Length: 153
Image (tube, rainbow, N blue to C red; front, side, top):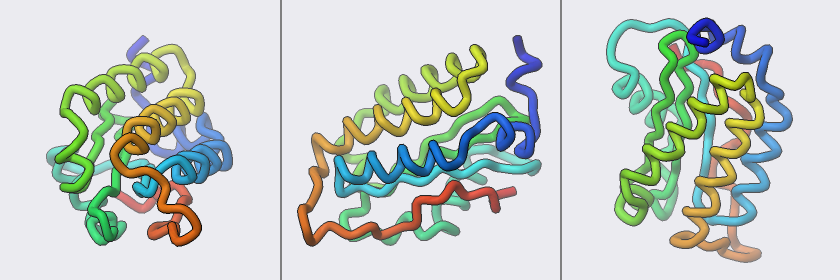
Protein backbone atom coordinates (compact mmCIF):
# COMPACT_ATOMS: atom_id res chain seq x y z
CA UNK A 1 0.00 0.00 0.00
CA UNK A 2 1.69 3.18 -1.23
CA UNK A 3 -0.44 5.30 1.09
CA UNK A 4 1.40 3.92 4.10
CA UNK A 5 4.73 5.11 2.72
CA UNK A 6 3.47 8.54 1.69
CA UNK A 7 3.69 10.48 4.91
CA UNK A 8 5.22 13.52 6.48
CA UNK A 9 8.13 13.60 8.88
CA UNK A 10 5.61 14.14 11.71
CA UNK A 11 3.65 11.09 10.57
CA UNK A 12 6.77 8.93 10.59
CA UNK A 13 7.82 10.30 13.98
CA UNK A 14 4.42 9.23 15.36
CA UNK A 15 5.04 5.69 14.07
CA UNK A 16 8.63 5.43 15.28
CA UNK A 17 9.55 4.89 18.90
CA UNK A 18 12.50 7.30 19.06
CA UNK A 19 13.72 5.94 22.40
CA UNK A 20 13.79 2.47 20.87
CA UNK A 21 15.67 3.68 17.78
CA UNK A 22 18.19 5.56 19.94
CA UNK A 23 18.67 2.47 22.14
CA UNK A 24 19.34 0.46 18.96
CA UNK A 25 21.98 3.02 17.91
CA UNK A 26 23.64 2.83 21.34
CA UNK A 27 23.59 -1.00 21.23
CA UNK A 28 24.99 -0.98 17.69
CA UNK A 29 27.83 1.31 18.69
CA UNK A 30 28.81 -1.09 21.49
CA UNK A 31 29.40 -3.70 18.74
CA UNK A 32 31.56 -1.48 16.54
CA UNK A 33 33.79 1.57 16.72
CA UNK A 34 31.81 3.01 13.77
CA UNK A 35 29.27 5.78 14.33
CA UNK A 36 25.63 5.55 13.21
CA UNK A 37 22.98 8.27 12.99
CA UNK A 38 19.39 8.37 11.78
CA UNK A 39 17.96 11.53 10.23
CA UNK A 40 14.35 12.08 9.17
CA UNK A 41 13.91 14.66 6.44
CA UNK A 42 11.10 17.12 6.09
CA UNK A 43 9.92 18.51 2.77
CA UNK A 44 12.57 19.66 0.32
CA UNK A 45 13.14 20.13 -3.38
CA UNK A 46 15.87 18.36 -5.26
CA UNK A 47 17.82 15.14 -5.03
CA UNK A 48 17.31 13.02 -1.89
CA UNK A 49 20.91 11.86 -2.25
CA UNK A 50 22.28 15.40 -2.26
CA UNK A 51 20.14 16.38 0.72
CA UNK A 52 21.31 13.23 2.55
CA UNK A 53 24.94 14.11 1.83
CA UNK A 54 24.36 17.64 3.13
CA UNK A 55 22.81 16.21 6.32
CA UNK A 56 25.82 13.89 6.68
CA UNK A 57 28.15 16.90 6.65
CA UNK A 58 25.83 19.07 8.78
CA UNK A 59 25.84 16.36 11.45
CA UNK A 60 29.65 16.21 11.44
CA UNK A 61 29.63 12.59 10.35
CA UNK A 62 32.66 13.14 8.14
CA UNK A 63 34.72 14.01 11.21
CA UNK A 64 35.18 10.59 12.82
CA UNK A 65 38.74 9.41 13.35
CA UNK A 66 38.37 6.29 11.19
CA UNK A 67 35.99 7.97 8.68
CA UNK A 68 33.45 5.25 9.49
CA UNK A 69 30.25 7.20 10.08
CA UNK A 70 27.04 5.90 8.50
CA UNK A 71 23.84 7.91 8.14
CA UNK A 72 20.38 6.41 7.56
CA UNK A 73 18.49 9.27 5.94
CA UNK A 74 14.74 8.69 5.82
CA UNK A 75 12.65 10.70 3.36
CA UNK A 76 9.09 9.65 4.28
CA UNK A 77 7.14 11.76 1.79
CA UNK A 78 9.34 10.60 -1.09
CA UNK A 79 9.27 6.95 0.05
CA UNK A 80 13.07 6.99 0.07
CA UNK A 81 15.91 5.88 2.26
CA UNK A 82 19.44 7.01 1.54
CA UNK A 83 22.44 5.53 3.29
CA UNK A 84 25.52 7.72 3.32
CA UNK A 85 28.71 5.97 4.43
CA UNK A 86 31.94 7.87 5.02
CA UNK A 87 34.97 6.88 2.95
CA UNK A 88 36.38 4.43 5.53
CA UNK A 89 33.13 2.44 5.68
CA UNK A 90 32.43 2.77 1.95
CA UNK A 91 35.88 1.36 1.18
CA UNK A 92 35.25 -1.94 3.00
CA UNK A 93 31.47 -2.46 2.72
CA UNK A 94 30.18 -3.40 -0.76
CA UNK A 95 27.47 -1.25 -2.37
CA UNK A 96 25.24 -4.33 -2.66
CA UNK A 97 25.11 -4.53 1.14
CA UNK A 98 23.70 -1.00 1.44
CA UNK A 99 21.16 -1.71 -1.33
CA UNK A 100 19.96 -4.80 0.56
CA UNK A 101 19.50 -2.80 3.78
CA UNK A 102 17.45 -0.21 1.85
CA UNK A 103 15.27 -2.94 0.30
CA UNK A 104 14.68 -4.64 3.67
CA UNK A 105 13.70 -1.34 5.30
CA UNK A 106 11.30 -0.48 2.48
CA UNK A 107 9.67 -3.91 2.95
CA UNK A 108 9.34 -3.32 6.70
CA UNK A 109 7.76 0.10 6.09
CA UNK A 110 5.29 -1.44 3.59
CA UNK A 111 4.23 -3.84 6.36
CA UNK A 112 3.87 -0.97 8.82
CA UNK A 113 6.90 -2.09 10.85
CA UNK A 114 8.53 1.32 11.13
CA UNK A 115 10.42 1.05 14.44
CA UNK A 116 11.20 -2.63 13.83
CA UNK A 117 12.51 -1.87 10.35
CA UNK A 118 14.79 0.94 11.47
CA UNK A 119 15.97 -1.12 14.43
CA UNK A 120 16.73 -4.10 12.16
CA UNK A 121 18.57 -1.87 9.67
CA UNK A 122 20.73 -0.44 12.45
CA UNK A 123 21.51 -3.94 13.74
CA UNK A 124 22.35 -5.25 10.27
CA UNK A 125 24.64 -2.30 9.56
CA UNK A 126 26.32 -2.65 12.96
CA UNK A 127 26.98 -6.34 12.32
CA UNK A 128 28.68 -5.58 9.02
CA UNK A 129 30.65 -2.62 10.39
CA UNK A 130 31.80 -4.67 13.40
CA UNK A 131 33.60 -7.03 11.00
CA UNK A 132 35.72 -4.11 9.76
CA UNK A 133 35.63 -1.74 12.75
CA UNK A 134 35.51 -3.80 15.95
CA UNK A 135 34.94 -1.99 19.26
CA UNK A 136 38.06 -0.22 20.44
CA UNK A 137 37.58 -1.30 24.06
CA UNK A 138 37.82 1.11 26.98
CA UNK A 139 39.34 3.86 24.83
CA UNK A 140 36.41 3.71 22.38
CA UNK A 141 34.41 6.88 22.67
CA UNK A 142 31.08 7.91 21.23
CA UNK A 143 32.22 10.49 18.67
CA UNK A 144 28.71 11.57 17.62
CA UNK A 145 25.41 11.95 19.51
CA UNK A 146 22.86 9.12 19.22
CA UNK A 147 19.51 10.98 19.14
CA UNK A 148 17.53 10.83 15.90
CA UNK A 149 18.04 14.03 13.88
CA UNK A 150 14.86 15.73 12.73
CA UNK A 151 16.45 18.97 11.55
CA UNK A 152 17.04 18.07 7.89
CA UNK A 153 14.81 19.60 5.27
